[in-house]
Image 1: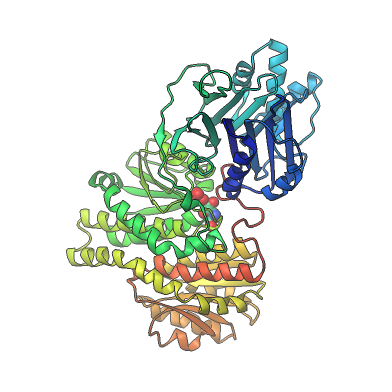
Image 2: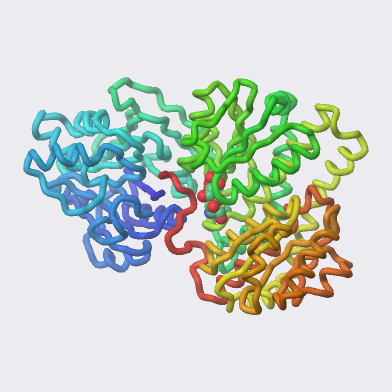
Length: 610
Ligand code: AGP
């Protein structure tokens, strides 16, 4: 996905745009650019490959005047990361500039129409096709700026969030969305635009979440009154803006003294989990639990959220005795799944903007299933496409590698399983009460895991030399093995695989060597003895074992080369604690390797394209 920022108002636009891009850089950082309508009403466009800081170096001695501008930070889809593919893209005359987040599916057909009309293209992007189309319609049909944008979007198939400037209308910014998010900020004598609220909240907490096919015209009130908002659809129907209060605050967007957002977000999990649990106690109403009390629960998600869903499966089936299937959204949406009206689909997404997950729930609803989403970003697309939502309420997660969102997602799923099991009479009162009480103790258990940072850093020294490694766990901690492996892969670029521990002897144990460490999650539990055998099998082949064990462990800790201990925790709740040392382990390995922890190569925080 990409990040879009826009500004119209009393301030100089450039500083607002650049600061906004830094807030959105987690959405993509292959290239960045700005377009400004200068005080002389000239359209100035500056852009560069690489991060926002490179753009600042590129633009610092240029004409940065003007109170209207748009800006973009890119995660490449069509066209490699390069200067010529970076946004903003301009029209043939140079009069129009546009930024875009999304995918234009019929861009080839539109491009051919323009090539036949004698247009040429500077980039490989679908975005350039749209800005050229706007100018083509303006000139061929003698349309106004706003009407030509409207007409062009009526011809577009695909997803977009766009912002456009026209040098011949120097007080106007036009924006529109379909399938990609866009938020308008309403300040005093100034208007903002953002892919989410993070570039806006330090100026105003009054926002308008644009709906699909909304189009908005932001006009500076330089000569008349304050800036003006005109909201309509791309078909020209007028709409009344729905101004809401956004709850995010600026301090949540800062690193708070930590070296990286990821470390901050790992260490704030005791607090964020408390917020999540308290919020879920309110939002998991009897009506929501009744919604879940279906014939079957279909969980769909991507990446880390899918791993959380897998923990949810284990918990709901064990505690509520209700069948659960967990599917990668990208597979679910295309394999023509059998979905019945008696099914409930649970979509899990931190960002609420993951394209595959959004498409999966749209399919589910078309098939007649109800949809409940578990999401962290209020007002994002996935909750808005659901019948009900439980927000994890852990605050913005900026680090690309998901951490506090995972523990929160698992906590919500665990509370669902407990309440569902209790409602269905499958969970006796003492066990229900004991586990519910223990949920409240989890933040302090996470705190003790975090206090092992120095031991974990030492373990990371060893792991940082590995070319490849295996993570193994059983039961509730098999999904933790998958998640721990993903963390290591995505921020340290070391290949890692998560495995059910018993599966090792069905092939992977052939890989065991001193050069390929095995990280095992081995807390006390009903299958601990089985895990001891799996660790023995690895050690018997001179494998190197790094283990997460319960305080006081006497078996695995004697076989492992290094251990991290966690407090005793009930098996079904253990993933919320066992994942924390693995988050820190991957963090320290990435730091030792000098990797870009918060913005790993090739990744973005949320994948809003399929
Ligand atoms: C996890 O560390 C990654 N950032 C990625 O796998 C992520 O979990 C996945 O893209 C899903 O994102 P979502 O939860 O915002 O839908």
